[in-house]
Amino acid sequence: MRDTDVLVIGAGPAGAVAAQEAKRAAPTLDVVLLERDGAVGTPVRCAEGVGDAGLREFANPVGAPWVARKIRRVIFLAPDDSEVKVAERDVGWILDRTRFDAFLAERASADGVEVLVGTEAAGMNRLADGRWEVRLRGALGDESVRVRMVIGADGVEAMVGRWAGLDTRVPARDMESCAQYVLRGIDIDPDAIYLQFGRAIAPGGYAWVFPRAPGIANVGLGIVALKADGRNAREYLDDWIARRYPGAEQTGYTVGGVITHTTITQTYTDGVLVAGDAAHMINPLSGGGIVNAMKAGRLAGRAAAAAVCAADTSARRLSAYHAEWMRLLGDDHLKYYRIKQALEELDDDFFNSLAHTVNAIPGDKRTLGRIFAHALVRHPQLIPVAARFFI
Amino acid sequence: GRYRSPMTPSEIAVVDLRVCDRCGLCLPLCPPEAIHLNLSDLVVDRSTCTGCRKCIAPCPVGALTMVAA
Figure 1 (cartoon, one colour):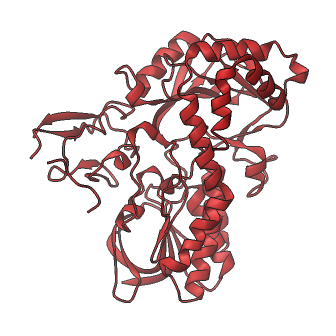
Figure 2 (figure 1 turned 90 degrees about the horizontal axis):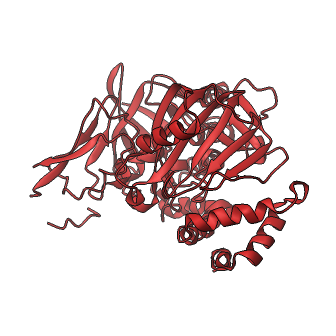
Figure 3 (figure 1 turned 90 degrees about the vertical axis):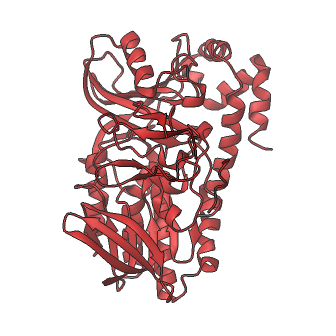
């Protein structure tokens, strides 16, 4: 049985950043990054949109081969198809996740991380000396590895947390069921992302169009199944596309889950940290998680390396990771979750009316602050929503 | 050991592997943690599933259904 100091399970953004940060923090440690699929970055289960500022903390997107498109505008579509443009600046980027994830893993590898693809963790148990024995299964057969620190970055499945005794379950009301196609030949503003809300379109979620190139976009939606009419996410998406983009050519197709909950109550235990989607570190309003995952991975990698170097991988020590995450973003997610709950009480008529209010503001004066002020005056039912941010 | 079962169930969940996309969405929805994913297949542990149906509707492709236990 081989030994390693830090084993990171899952080579998405959280895992790759965690592995690299652990190795950078303590170059003498053995750090292994595990990927179940045959290549890092596949399959893609993501709309691939990311904010500009958050991304730049980790990599420069300008001219990068892992960028599909720069985004300058956001266009909201009300349930009645009214369009509302709310930004005119550098908003963010549409990534090519296949290339982006590979870029992050290659960067970790260049720093000395051992990257194993086509190998999955199949279970783990705690040894008498405090280390974890992790059972691996891959193309070369089964083997076990003894590990001082395990970082679970295994996404929505969150098996590592489960094996470690952490509660990673999700209430069905906070699970978005998502489906997405890559569509070609559609008439869109190639520099804008489109978001449409509506109970008949995407109950409990929203539909999106994220351009990859002129005429080509990731087109998908997420629904909360408890609020649906019996159709699954793919059926809702097919109906929406048939109405908005009839005749478009469908190429890529993917499905997946997005957890719109709050960070799990405990992201650590003896010798184990969980990060990213595996710990529900997702913005519960937008469902965005890429930058959150990288930020959590950075914290987890550093915490794991420091714990191994100090020969103290106890839950007590590792609890500082959880506290740091909550200060960084976790507490904000609690506020966003309360806003999400309040917004769920508003119906399609409200959002149609809100769109008309916003469109009455001249485009060059349409800042988020001005939109919010106008909306509160014209639509007092928003006041309790705003209040949920503070209480 | 976290889950207190409400109870053998009359129905349990099964997955149609021809339809399943292996996205893993259903795993954290299962209260008794009866659903597993490995390199090739989604598996519902018949001995653990309580037939609560919480995994059925959220499946984006409708791969999970209930059958007589």
